[in-house]
Structures are given as structure tokens and as C-alpha cells.
Length: 464
Image 1 (cartoon, rainbow, N blue to C red):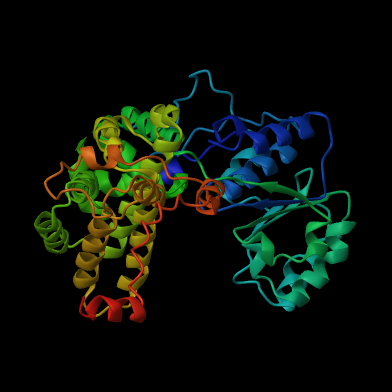
Image 2: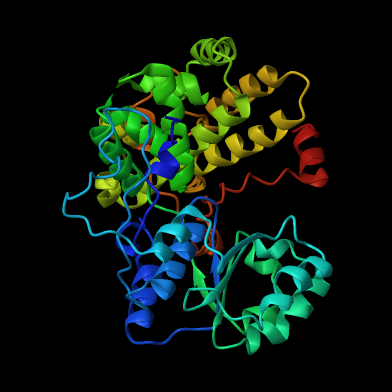
């Protein structure tokens, strides 16, 4: 039996299984339950968050033999071909009612009355006329509704959109349109105003990690929490990307997965290297920075990705500096990183972190077109270390007022104590008030005696 990938085998079959889109699923459930069925829907959002999946579930909700219903027939998931998988179809008589033909065929993509159209291959107006407009007047062969699911609808031409205007605004009562797109700004306003628009959001890393843990437990995969968290963070809010990456890691590592396996397969930068770089910068250790840059090059990491991950780590530190309560947020401070983040936090001021973010984003941009990316990375790390030696403006003003020397602190100061001694930066209003105050003038020196006149000098030289 052929293998079914995780992203297809664990594809949601009902609204309750769609992860991270509660606003969409709850609205659709209430609308179908109350009979408020629209003629056109637009599902907009990034890739891999459930747009096409929700469109198929909505088609089943409308065409189920018991529908329109918010709870269509429960379908057994496809077999994975792996005898250890637990989501294989249940045997007959196991208590699962037999799904209706409409629900089964829609889920398998072979229902005659539910047409899934790829707008990328049906861009021109002739295709739209032949596939959609010409079939609007024909009644469904069996189902309750004839449903057109148009994927990546933003790729239709302007003439195709114009041809659909009247059909979408006043379709026959047996027709419904469901359009999915990753670029809603490219859809004409005339189409959007005739449809109900549902915004799909990126999925939180914790929700993705929870789903991957459930998949790993069901398929008897021993994956460390750190490895699952790294896969979830690398997906950047896309459940499909996370499941595809997890499938790839399983193919490499087998039934036992570590964080090193994930970093190796997906080409991700190890968290230890990132924290080592921040430790070297905090200690103002230039030789260690060069060594870490060389280690990244030897490991074959994409140096742009390294800068991007460093910037992300700096951003997490800045968030924790502004709001310490976010230390329990897994998207900012995962359990495996919490101790090192806590140790690094007092070593960087907010000014340091803001300047660090600018340095890293600039380095990522420069490395993109550089002939020697390693050189740019090394110079960026040294610039980062040097910027930590800058003195806040308020501290300079305090030294001017107190008469203290403006030279920096002694070079033997500890790296951990230096940032702690820096006061919080003054606001622009405070600086302006201090600069506007008249400085105290020193006392005027005593006047020197006046030189003698020429007459008195001549008298002094005359003989007695």
C-alpha cells in the first residue's frame, strides 16, 4: 500500500479539527446552523493554515445528506501504509456510521457537483466561461449545491474577474462560490464586496507543537520537546509546512528524533550556536566571535539565516526586557531556552538590543549580494561588540554637570557589570530641559594692579 504523507493523513475532516482558526470556524458553524448561507466566500490568509481544507469541509456541510449541517459525516482518514499508524480506517462494525456518498466523494476530490479549480491554470476568460459560467444554469447531478472552489483566485486575469461579477453577485440558488487566496489585495474590490471574506491567521507555535506531539504519539515516534519546538518555530505559522518538515525528519531519524536531527535535516541554525554568539558579544570577546563565525561557515549554515535567527533572538530578549511576564510565553521563551535567556537578559540594555537588531538586519541585507559572506558576518559581529561600548546621552550629561571625565570606564570592568551600571536612557524632554538650564559660571578672577603711568615712572628715575 502506498504511503500517505502526514499532511494529508492528518488533514482536518471537521471544523473542530481546524487548528488556530476559531473565529472562522465558529462563524461558519453558526451561519450554517442558522441557515445564513452566503453565495460567495473568500478565504484569505498565508499558506498552509487551512483555507482549502476549510473550503472542502464547508462543501461537505452544504451537501451532506443530513445537511446543510454544521456536523457532516465523519470520515475515516486514509491509511498511511505504516502498520503502526493509528489513524487507519476503522473496521466495519466499529461504531463509526457509514458516511454518505457526497461527503466521501468531496473529501476524495471526485464529486461531480463540487469543482475544484486551480486559478493558475484557468487564468484566461475563455477558461472561466467554459468551466464556470457555462455550467451555472445546469442543476447539480446529485448534491444539493453545485460548488466552485477556486484556489489561488488572485491569479485570474482582470477580464476573468469581470466575467464573474454578475455570477458571484446573483448566482442561481443552487450555486455557491468558495475562493481561496494568499494575496487578497490582488482581488478586485468588486469581487470582495460581493463575498463574505474570512481572514485566516498564522498559527501559534505552541498550537503547532501540540499537534505535532499528538501525531508523534499516534505514530509511535519518540521526539524530544526541543525537537518538536524547533520544527514548530521553523514553520513560521504554517501547519502544513510543519507537518511536511516533520515527515522529512522522521524519514531521516526514524522513530527517535533529537534537536540535532531537526537542525541537520532542515538546515536550521542550532540554538546553542546562537546563544554562544550572544555570550561572546556580551563578554566583548572578539576572538570568540571570529571562531563562532568560522564554526557557522564550516557547518554549512546559510549566513543570512544565521543573521535572521540572531535578530529573532535579540527581539525575544527585547520583548522580555520590556515585559518580563512574557517569560512563560512559548513563542518568546521556549522551555529549553528559558534558563539561557534569563542569564543573558541582565547583560544587555534596551539600547544595546535595539542597536543589535539594526546591525543584524543590515548584515542580512549585505550578505545577500556579497561575494564573501563570511567577511560581512565577522565585521557585523565586531561592529555589534563595538556598539556596546557607546555611552548613553544622559550619562554624558551627568558627567558634564558633575565635572567627571568623559572618558569611558576602565577596560578591566566586567562585561556583566557594565550594562547594569548604565542608567535608563533619558527622554528627549528631559535632555532638552537639562540643556536649556544656564550653567553656573565660575567666579571672576581678581583684577590685576594697573601698570604705572609714564610720568610716575620718570619721577621715580629722577635723582633725589
